[in-house]
Image (cartoon, rainbow, N blue to C red; front, side):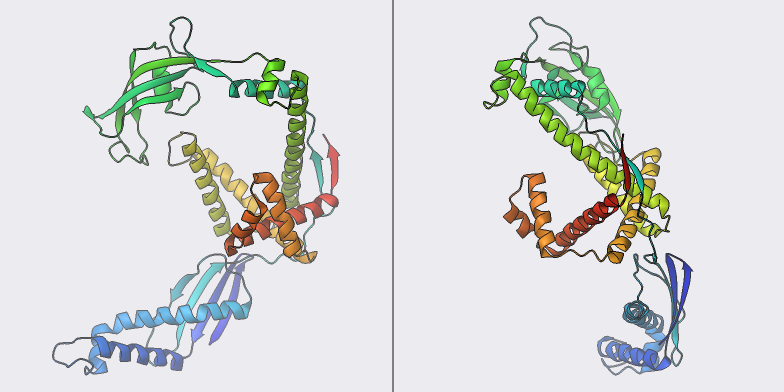
Amino acid sequence: MQVNVQKLSPVLVEFDVEIESGRVQEELNKAYMALSKSARIKGFRKGKAPRQVLQRMFGPRVAADVAQKLVDESFPKVVSEQQVQPVNNPAIEPAELKQGAPFSYKARFEVVPEIESVEYEGLEAKRPSKSVTDAALDEELEALRKAHSTLEPPKEARASKEGDFVTVDFEVTVDGSVVDDAGATDLPIELGSKSVFAEIEEALIGKQVGDTAEATLDMPAGHPHKRLAGNKATFKLTLKELKERVLPALDDEFAKDVDEAFGSLDDLKQNVREQLEKKAEEDAENKLAERLVAELCNKNPVPVPPSLVERQSQLTEREILQQAWMQGQRGNQLNEELRARIAVDSEVKVRAGLLMAAIAKKEEIKIGDPEIEEGLKELAEQTGKNVAKLRAEYREPQKREMLIGMILENKVLDLIEGKAKIEDE
């Protein structure tokens, strides 16, 4: 087998592979022998048809099958011999396979670029402030009041407004016909929460108990209900119940209701401030890491394989859409502006991953069992899960590799931060 390697770019390689005629003939002979045993041809007993007849009837198919087998067999060997790291499936351009002649093909694919050196010492970045303002404390206390609030009917009948909690019945029609299984009864909705379509919220605001309302929507093509998907649907709504949020007074009794450990409102405020300070410190460190990674990428603009960027973009888009669906925002695609930002961020993520892998190799950073155990303990603390359960969960090879990658990335970031020039904002 002869191989010619062309490096078309730092991330694109092409193999020209030629397989000797003897190997080609060997596979052709095997293919026709197997075919002669199974083919049923009029005028011949099974297994007795001459090869010339088989070639005339099945020649193109046999040639294609043998060509594919030779590619599948030889390509991994060439990759191993040439010591390259393909990151996508190769685009194969085969020549015509003929008896008595060598078979050749071209394979073009993307590779991880060779990174000989990385500039990562002395990176400059600013550490965000870790301070907690009184406004942030007040906001958190207000959130606690909401969490301990009650829902009660207004003392006097009134129209609904944003922030109210309503209960509705509704049916859905398409082209004037009621759509079975699309309606609901006693559906709770917090107006302004964006838990349902905006048009439905708008139709319900300003209505009193007993009122009806209509909202017509162009349903997304990806809606799970087939009758609604891609159609114009009318929601006929009846407001059955209206309640408003009643907040508890911010006093010592409230603090005790939150947790018996708090003897006074001041105790609660102190605890909340400590929690906010802890979170502010974590946020500051995460933001600092982001800034250092961005600076690392700016200092080392190495090329990245487009297929890796596309893969990362698709992963991020799926995560965003899944989160949107969980929050009641129905849609099956993102706008072009957001997709463009995701593509830029994905390129940075891929470049950062390649650079940090190169740094880890240079600094001989390795992850062993002690580091994995420490990583599991940190993960248990962050998620509130049992360490033993996490240990069992991360025995699965793919998850274990993900954990090792995360630990390695954190170690490299610690190294970069230790060598960086950091100022506080």
